Length: 239
Image (cartoon, rainbow, N blue to C red; front, side, top):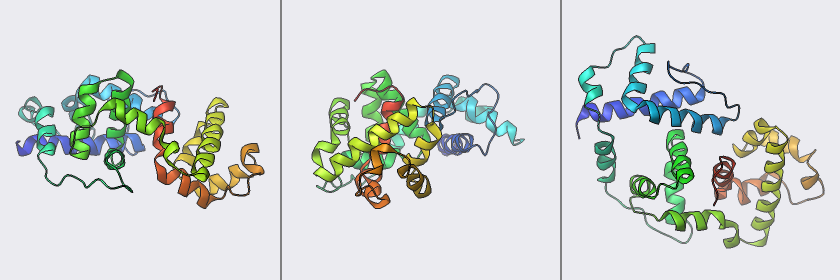
């Protein structure tokens, strides 16, 4: 793959991360009405994919007073980028502690754009796209149905403490979303300790649950991929 191809891909990842983080204004052609952070990422990613990566990168570069050579824009090949990433060696080792689905999610969650893309694939039931993404992110082809079953029923593999935590916190987060308090839900999902402690003092689900400490929340929810599952479901995906 050409160096120019990868350079444009790297520009795209950087620009999109900056737009999502709010450190770069929306370029012409993009709009966002979502207030929830994750919903905003998905909304913007959908628009970027419709616009095309070259057009998005060119618009962002123009904001900085730069002009990307037209030949570089015209020659961009997304499939070549993905193929190049696939060719990287070292397939991760599958272990009982960190299975291949966890490896996949760890990789996807490194980039907001990839997580948004995963959600979009699941929403559209794009099995071919999911298989391609899993090859890039986990160096192996994963089946979408198997992934849905694993993530959708993950707590069944945990102990009673984990199952209780997941049941209670999913209920709390769903209630917050229903009440229009998405910013509190987002802070909890991001692991903000102060938000959790303040919420614990008011939440009827947690008030009379002595085990519900921040460490309990981290161990049984935050560190077990349930925030990703909640965000996926919150974006209309059935697991």
